[in-house]
Length: 419
Image (cartoon, rainbow, N blue to C red; front, side, top):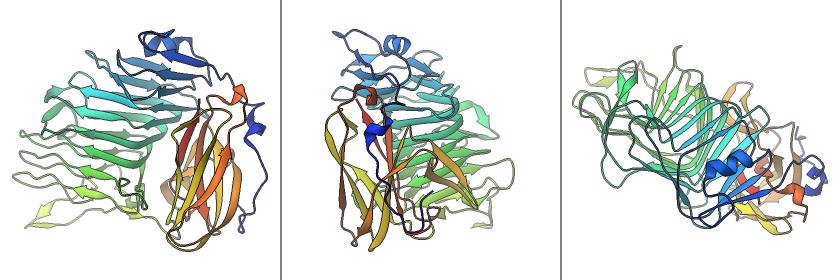
């Protein structure tokens, strides 16, 4: 645990070399060893890195392996198929993390979601995922473009589910009467959503889709960057025939708890409209109704408390062994800080009295640096990856604690994958 004075603990990345596994690099592309992503996954072992050349590839399933899938340069496209998501990640064990960076899915197939993340005691992180809503989806089997179920930690970073043209759709597997198709649905899962834009589908028949739908025993941590103009979260409910979609919709079997969703540094929330009712301009707990034109029961996000006003940034998404990159620590006011990093980047979801806080796994970290910041001034910390092959595949998370209480003063996480 961090001490109240955030004392630095000397360490180097080399200390992890003995415990790191594999570190092979598998190349995918028309002229590479593997021509499909699935073939590379089948050959990979825990700790391997799969680097994908630009192109269009068939759907793939990643089950039970700790690997990273990265683009060699520009992003790569993955296709859906009948009854098959483009990306299916399942069975990742506790203590393991999967990272997928730079995937594009052109979503046109109503028989399955574009992305399915399910039954993962470990963590799944998608960065720069772009789901393009390229078709209407009448009578779809999917409830959302991205469906996340029974996953300990789902991190969606710098990603979009969006379209340049209005799209409509309805699901034949609704939650109650909610037959709209959402951008992302969390079911019995914990999500960290940072720098995302999510759109729900229109539905002229009944209920429109939600930007983000959070169901049952789930929590969500909505984190917007505060020092970069491109860093806000935006959630859009679809336009409905009867009921408009919600920006964020909380649906729970028990009475909804406001602290199931934590919003840091704000978010752009856009309700959909309908002939009878519009989606609420925040979070609905499935009990809110309009009576004589007024909302009697509704929820807004629980805001970050304490001194949680900082930000951690890395200047690279991926880094090669033997090279140096920079981690920057920002804060709105002068503050003492401790910059922590964690290999594999698991998260604790529950801190006493809080939900969805996105804490780094405090049993598996070291402090790279501690010090103090000036208001709105970045403090750079230089990090060098030793030239050790065993460090390939390492998935690092950086997070900064400000002040004496880590529960109230954690910045958003930043990710680097070693390739």
